Image (tube, rainbow, N blue to C red; front, top):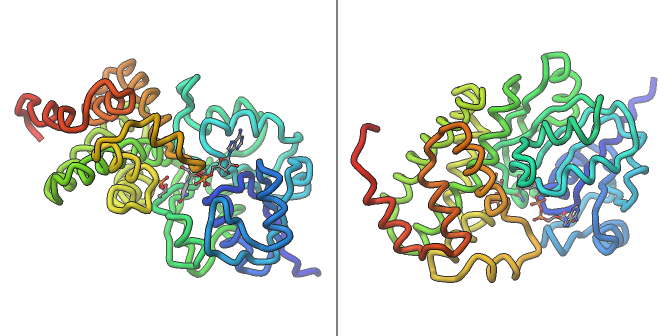
Length: 329
Ligand SMILES: NC(=O)c1ccc[n+]([C@@H]2O[C@H](COP(=O)([O-])OP(=O)(O)OC[C@H]3O[C@@H](n4cnc5c(N)ncnc54)[C@H](O)[C@@H]3O)[C@@H](O)[C@H]2O)c1
Ligand SMILES: O=P(O)(O)OC[C@H](O)CO
């Protein structure tokens, strides 16, 4: 019997897709990476580098790249790592098949209000879906630094099929069937990280940041429970774990966007300068809309929305949050 490991496909050649490809290739298997830009594909294949999105990492030569989604037809497992707003149209172009799709993007679709799993179900009907999410800076995973994630599966059989293909000595998935909870944690933390960046940019100190993390977590929990998520998932790796990571470092694109807002720059100008995605900027308005429809109060999310549209300056936004009526925790 051959001991050849099945090729895994990764859809998305940004920082996270490339880092996941590097992690997956570390056990000697071939990884096929689909990237949107031909220049990214050429550089990965010729120089084993992705200088546009993951600088300073020598990629495993077992990673091959392609711009053709049809090339992924032979893969038994596909990790989906596009920005959230592009996922639906990329999956709609995927040739039909039965391979598991592991959704790794973090966000809510702006136009529909759908979680990624709902958008994927519509775009690629009949595919088994799971969600991988957690505290995962791409550059650390690419360097093989220890990382743990939530892998939310439809059932235990799916977990047993997928987890052994994804787990590595320094990359540990944890099982849950709470797909909604895993998705909401990853989507909401990006918005809250913008708020924490604002606090940093304004120089308001560590107490204020810790308060925002805790009150932000209360918002995430209220919203998650209203959508059917489980509290344990929200307080696990894909919720609180990722919230703490993303709210703690300028390595986060969302946090650094917030920091620049706090320093007085305007959102449109900051985002126009970037090729990389700060998902919280796209998720914030749709999250606000869905939360209002469900009657869930999210004052920090409301504040981020106002900052992103430029309706209010950072200092005034924080003053308004601090002036809210006193209430129970
Ligand atoms: N970077 C991380 O550390 C990290 C970690 C965990 C999860 N994520 C999530 O992974 C997802 C992808 O983020 P990233 O960091 O890999 O991206 P990135 O910011 O590094 O790169 C942007 C990506 O967008 C792609 N893109 C641009 N226009 C496109 C289009 N029209 N159609 C399809 N793709 C297009 C580019 O090819 C590139 O892959 C996001 O949802 C992000 O929240 C990122
Ligand atoms: O750089 P960010 O803010 O997109 O965060 C990256 C990851 O989601 C952290 O888990």
